[in-house]
Length: 172
Image (cartoon, rainbow, N blue to C red; front, side):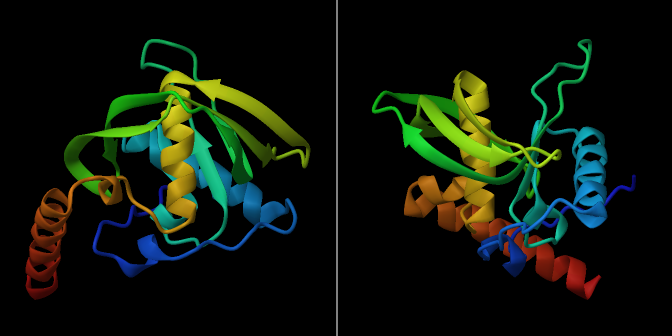
């Protein structure tokens, strides 16, 4: 296991479409292991492979609290196959947009199909925070960020702030 650097906007790889994983091999297992270590260290509840610079359809999630046993969930090639008409609003944040949170409206429940690390295809109906997290992470695999759901004004403000910070880092 190894910590991987988390990419921050405006990094262009965060806006790219990720390729499907064609087989569960040692490289995929190492990626998942590294992603969990990176996610826990951040700390966060979800991480998508493009956030660590790997353009593959891999997601890690763990909603457990610090005082609870870990409940790691790895999803390979996840896809939403059904979504409820009922909507819910959560305050979302993102490890690639540090210290910025906004309310986002999404379907309250979704059914997701994915492959486990054992190569088994699973369909799972999720609701609540897990539903929001699954949708947020799958968006990453499609080059979509949670700020894309905000008004143009808010989105532009966030993008300008992080572009300015990136320019300062390049100079410094």
